[in-house]
Image: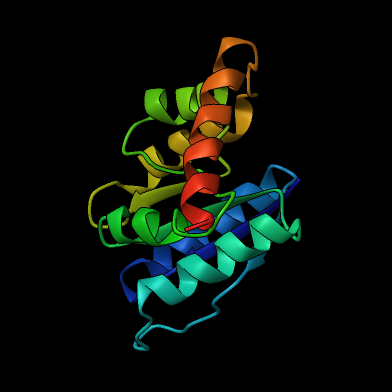
Length: 151
């Protein structure tokens, strides 16, 4: 599985550590904004890059990190076909993969410690979409998106 990673300046160190962690688990990790410490990055730029890569099929899923993770989630969800979920604990990360078929997870480097972030990623990437009754709900979400894209 290929994972696209993006962050703003608040999460550079966390992104590097999580990419290394996931690479060690056998995932191919792509950095969509290789900024360096001391540089600034506006989170919508990183969110758009990763969300568009997921939408285009360049990567299977994405991980977006900023100070809180909230701005990344809002920005990524503006890209049609993206279902980004903001998670600060493992249970929600697992369920958003199982029930919402989320294709991007966002976290806050100023909110979540690195070990908890690893647990969150383990749950998100270890879970599979269940389909069934959840597919109908995902289809309803997609319909809302399609209705507004036509306006």
